[in-house]
Image 1 (cartoon, rainbow, N blue to C red):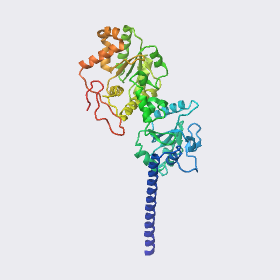
Image 2: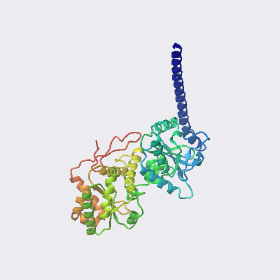
Image 3: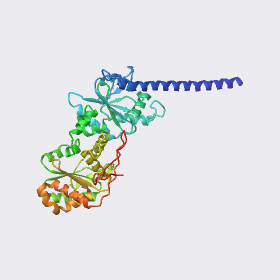
Image 4: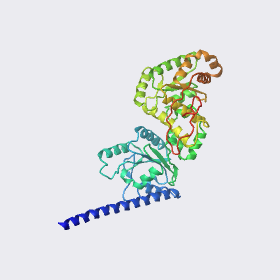
Length: 436
């Protein structure tokens, strides 16, 4: 009996020691693999295969990728010497992100030369090799994988712990998707090219910080920047015709009905061609769809039929803010950022809002719902100015005067988190005072 107890104790001790030894050995192996990744990204390579093999799969015994177009297994060779965009997300990636990236990917691959490839790396909180990875997780992964037209890893379990650690600690992936751009030699081009892709699409190629800076130098606050990627040609045609174009948003249907009717009446009196476009509100998907249905049925204004466009309009504006903050810009030294912050603050208020643009010109006038509606109703007061200066310029001056005369309360604004922290000073887009 005593012998059996001794044997049992020895067995438990041996198992505990073996488990501890295996765990320690694995930790050392993972640390070495992590340090190797750090070193490799500091080195120069002739192509991207060394980097990709250490990120994805180093052996040649299996084909680690799935081609999103053919749904067949392929090797890493399909990515050799190509710019690779690593789409990094968990299994909660938004369907809107996938739909827009599918459009971008197909558009970029329509020509004879493919400028870049996309590869999805799913980062999950549970171990895909463990029992916790059940059929629900597997089904979710497969559904997402099947909806992507680009390359994906064939299974999340292929990504080693050292790679996941690197992605989280060096590229700062948490929950929100990021797109890491690697050049044809595997060198890091951008730790997150997502925002420049949302702003400029494939024009952001090769997705470097220098390219992003160059694109911003060519930009100004104009209608083309605001609606890029959101127009089927309708708004562009209006711009070429020299029409006055009004973008407006909010979710107060009574205000929308009143504003559109009054603005159309003013345009008739002023004898100007006015085109109105409803752009919705962020974070109100179902409500905006209901309002859009009413706007279309009552013919209040032009309105996008695809709900994705409303989402993309606000996502692009937020990406512009991300990009500007990342480059150290502020509302005080960057006019474009000033306007972006103003529109985003309008969106966070309980009012509607509107921007009037003079065709393809730079003249713009914008204000919150109450002010812009009152200005329309008071057209007689600035009608003569409209004849002399032009409708949009006169409206701009009238709104500025109204802002000076009206007690002002700064709108709230939710700023996006970026690496390096938030700006120390945030100035209100309307009154110019520093916000708390």
